[in-house]
Length: 242
Image (tube, rainbow, N blue to C red):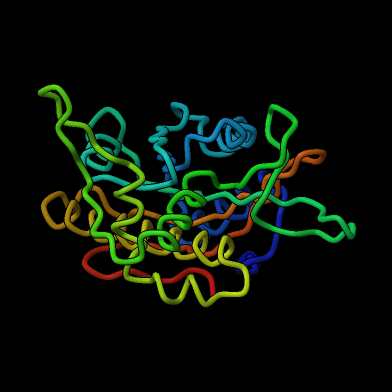
């Protein structure tokens, strides 16, 4: 099987080609229709053309971008339904990679489009700030304003991440910790929802899902690492990378 090393940084196109090769080694006749769940931060569009080049030859890539790389039931249902037929699902989180004052590479910040340094991912930095300032807060994932209901995307992030609050706050690099944890919790939610889908629609299998981290860089192209890679063939799942 093609070697993909967990956590190793690859150029995006190279990583996607390795993933596609592994899929075809496992399922030779598999025709991929990709769905991407990623953060809506403007810098993350840089690798989209490379996803499309590798996975989008049949009909492009179904994208479901929200604040902070998170998945929702109805996005999944639309992606998997007739007409979209998604069978490859990626959850992509991102983190800035920059040089600190000593010239050392550091993670968690980036030079923004206005030329100023900022936290990256911005949504996760807001959640992290709230974990410090309001450690006992119970997130509300929706609110009513002027008779309209609004989903609070940051609170949804916080709701899923909060069980890991202590682990994050005692980490040496809290932005790295919250980035990895968000990828894990969103991917687990995606897996849970997909397994519910295939229970009622067994024709949807096999389904591949994987989790990546984008390392956003100001002066060089982004790099990606593969963190999780799963194959769903029924109620269970097989880990394709260790």
